[in-house]
Image 1 (tube, rainbow, N blue to C red):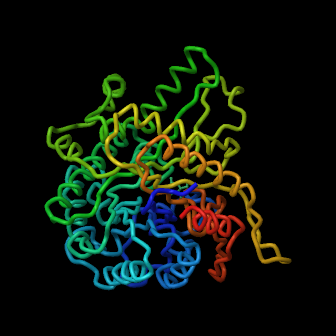
Image 2 (cartoon, helix red, strand yellow):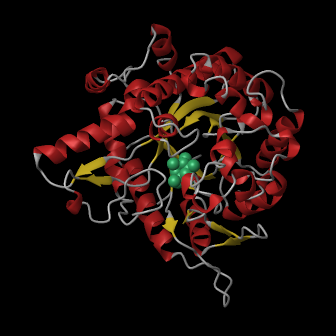
Image 3 (cartoon, helix red, strand yellow):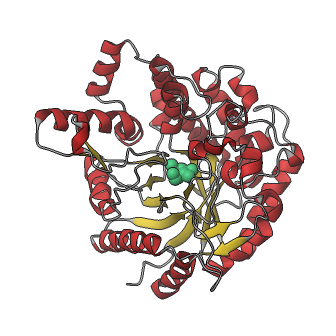
Length: 442
Ligand code: BGC
């Protein structure tokens, strides 16, 4: 099938997972640098500053690979702590120059940068002032966003305010992400505040007068009850409300559901909310970015969940693979909110739990399982487009193996294999496959 004219075929990455190079160039500390110091916080004890792909010095290599793949867009993020080591105030010139160079080089190569402002690396200096629990967080984020729009607004066509706001709940409420707190009331307040901050960034973008697009990325891990019992149906409903509807209701539906507000009220975890917060998140956005990986089977009876994927960035139990689920899930979201804005599949990919080795005979990683997953997911995208769904792009997660947050180096998503001793990147079989898929689809 030919995809619509101008359809974006891309790959996605994030600053924290790729840049590495310690604190070179005046990068400040992020909450992940500090979190990584806690015993067992990151599998294998890796440090983000050392465990990434050295893209801070190897961007030209990455660019060559992007050109080789034939993508026409690259989704990357700015490290807030690199451009503003204190979180607010003075810009770090070396940091801002780094991104300017990346963006210019991409544009020269005909690859549109799609830039995320927040992909989980909050400056530690702001965490010390309360982080996402602080009501000032929306102003900090707005200041940062405004500075980025002034610097790059005229050259960047697509902006994403937040990548997967659930990460903030995982950090303040569940503890397995930075900064590592396990307090549900805090988690709820933090996730409410990060959504508000997103709205504040949209406000800054409109004020800047730039004519590109700005949107938000929310990941959907739809729960599927394993049986028809009322218990399993209720559990799936509850997990859907907590894990993704919290964000999509607020962003695309105008506010929170009665279900979630009642639940938090009863639990004593209801967040403080102000009218201003809703005014900000209700500012119109230009697109919705959906990250889709899999659906999640749930049951109150553990024995029913054979090999279920828990969702999120867990290394264990990735046995449930449901690339086709993308089709129903996207239709569901579109119908649920009567969506009129365009959609991007802002992330989709296959996580392999365990080592992937370069075959000595042919110098290739034989990741046929990844190709199988990707071809089914892309078939779902084709079907959605044929149904008339306004999907403008597909970003494969991810360009090269990086570190998978709390799962460290155990889970691999890359099209390219990264050797973490030499930082050499090697094309996997799936990279050739994606290159050919793109070429045939234009
Ligand atoms: C995140 C990425 C992550 C990927 C695979 C998404 O949750 O945006 O940073 O590596 O999924 O788990």
